[in-house]
Every structure is written in structure tokens, then in C-alpha cells.
Length: 535
Image 1 (spheres, rainbow, N blue to C red):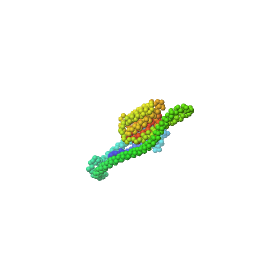
Image 2: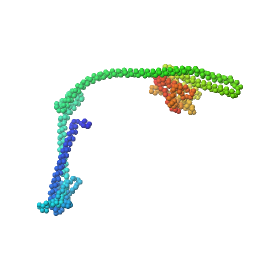
Image 3: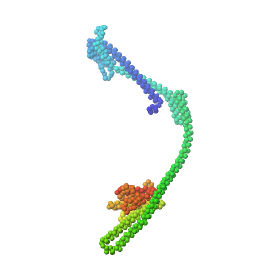
Image 4: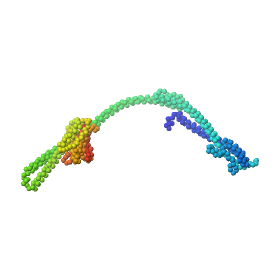
């Protein structure tokens, strides 16, 4: 279908007329050949019938007397005929009495005719059938004649077809191709820009009608194109003006949207900070009030327990001489009571000291931080915090030791933050890590393997502080509660449960950062703090 659509008019004409002519020629040739073959076969068969009649009469006498020599001479004379391939003579019992040539051939087509041999001993009597003669003759001459007529008919058909096709092509070229070629050339010129002239064709045939229609369409097209060009120019001017206005409005809208989004973000942040500040202020006031109320009776309790211990010791010294006069049982009972009282007072003093530590941490937790922020070096702050905690623990615990490792970012920029609060948060986490690692490896019998590491780096425009220790680690349940106020994993009397909570509030609420823990039970714990650069 695509080939037919792309083909030229002349090609389509040839594709239609040539098969038609070939079909007519082929039909003519078949009919002509059939009649020629039939005529040749009828002529040859008629001649062979005549030959058979004549020869049957000629051989009747020799067959009657069974003269083999004469029979042989007759059939030999018959074989001289170029169309005869074989002859057989039969007697009245259908026994062959003379033969020459062949009746069947593998190389050519043989036809057969058979005639009775009639003999009349006396003139006027009816002939008696004394045998038969069978003649085989070749159809080669028929086939040769057929081939000659075939090529003759084929040549005539080819000549007639060529003449017909040539005449049709010439007529097509003169009547259609030439005017269409001129018409297409004019269309090509018009396509290239030469639209000022009409195509002139004065004939009133179909091509003339087509040319007149084309000229009218071209004139309308030129007129419409000019009108469209004017409209397009006007539209382009309007579009440019409208586009300029839209861009200005879009810029204004984008600027207004950015300002609104910035104001909204600032408002949300301010609201969150106000809410957190109010919560913290309320909690701080409540915590400070409770702590102050507890502080006075707690001080009295601690002071009186210490004084009571001192008085009991003095009483025991004063009664030393009097005790010697008492019975042994009474003296032992007095010692037991005094020892019990001293133990109770010691426990009261110990738990009072722990309660005093809790109160102090509550006061520190609720203390309002200064509003001013400072540009500081996080690396220096981290080093100082680790050193302070290490020397503080060595002063409290004789023989305390731990391996400290530092991986501080070399190109870490300075950060705006609350330095005292941030240092307090780092120290709280470092102290927990040092104590956990030291006790874990001391329990394992190898305290020298206790390690704590601190590292700083820049991650997504935030300063990350990582504090890692190889202590006992934490389960997932402990990790989920580790930043809750008053929750501690230390033994009773050793921790207040406010250190990590305070560090979390300083990093997340005060500085708008992030803090979380990563731990593997029995192996390590790592606390990650992220402080925004502009915090």
C-alpha cells in the first residue's frame, strides 16, 4: 500500500495496463496454442489412418498366404515414413507375424492406430478379416509445430504489447504527464516563495479544472496569509505586553510568598520557643520552689545527724569509765545500741547528702540561662570539658584511670551557642561514659581497657559531637528512657537521673539541635549531639 501511494502516475498506469495486456496476451496464446495443437493432432491422426488403410490393403495378400518375406518388405517400406516408429502385423489369432521398430518409447510420445486386414479371394466378394496391423507414430512433429506456433504467438503478443504500452505511455505523457509536470513545477515555485503568478492552462479538461481551482485557492491563501500575518503581529505585541505584566506579577507573588513563608516559619519558631520557654520557666520556678523548700529541712537533717554522731562519740568517751563498772551484758547492750544509732545516723547522713545533690541538680536544671550567645571553638570546648571531668573523677576516686581518645575536626568552623550550657551538657555525657566504662571493665577484671572517645565533625551544616565509650551498653528499652528526668542506670545513691535530661534540654530546646543515643548491649554506647551552625 505504501509503494502504491508513493508511486508516480506513470508508474501506476504501467502497473495497471501491463498486467492487463499480459493477461490478454496469455489468454490469446493459450487459445491459439490449443487450436493449433488440436489441428496438428487431427491432421497427423487422419494421415496415419489413411496410411493404415492403404497398408492394410497392401499387406492383405502376403498375410493370406503367410509370405513372411513379403510381409517384411511391406512393413520395412512403411518404416521409411519419418512419423512412423513401429509396425506389428497380427494374424487372425492375434499372434504377431511381422514386426519392425518400437511401440513404446521413454524419450518421446508415441500414438497408436490399428486397422483390420481384409482379404477377398474373389472379386466382388466381401472381404474376410485375416488379421490386423498396428502402427505407432510419433507426436514430435505435433510438439515441434506447437513450439513454432508458440514462439510465433509469443513474439506477436510481445510486439503487440510493446506497441500498446508504448502508445499508452506516449498518450499518457502528452495528455497527463506534461501538464501535470508543469503544474507541479509551478507548485514548487509557489512553495519556494514565488506566489505572484497564476498557472495558465487553457484546456477545458480535468487538468484545466484542477488548475483553475488551484489558482483560486492560491489567491485565497495569499489573502488569508496576509491577514493572518497582521493578526499574528498584533497578537505577538499583546502577548509580549501580557507576558511582561504576568512576569512582574509572578515576581511580586513569589517575593510575597517567600516573605510570608519566612514570616510563618519565624512565627512558628517563635511560638515554639515561647511555649518551651513558658514550660521551662514554669517548670523551673516550680522546681526551684520545691528545691528551696526542701533545702532548709534537708540542711537541718544533715547537720543534726552529723551533730548527733559527734555527741554519741563524745558520750561514749565520757561513759568509758562508768561502763567498766557495769555488768558485761549491760555494757554489750550499750555498745550495740550506740553502734546501731551511729549506723542509722550514718545512713541518714548518706541519704541526706544524696538528697542534697538532687536538690542542687534541680536548682541547676531550673536556673535560667543568659540570653547572649557567643562565637566559640567547639573543639576547645570539648577538650576542656573532657579534661575537667577526668581530673574531677581522679580527685574523687583514688586510682581512677581511663584511656581518652580525641578525633576533633581540623577545619571545623566556630559556632554561635551558649558556651556554658553546651559545656555542661558535654560534661554530663562524658562523666556518665567514663563512669560506665570504668566500672564495666573493673568488673571484668581489666580496668585498663576502659576507653572514652570524643569526636567532632561537620554534617549537613551542623556540628556533630560524638561521645563514645566501651561500657556495658544499653538495651533498646533503656535507650528509649535514657533522657527522661530522674531516670538513671546507676546504683542507688550514685546518680540523680538529671544529667542526661539536662544535656538533652540544652541541645534540643536551647540550641534547636538533635541528640540521640546509639548503643549495643555489652559492647558500647555513643551519644550524638548536633548543633546548628547559627544556633
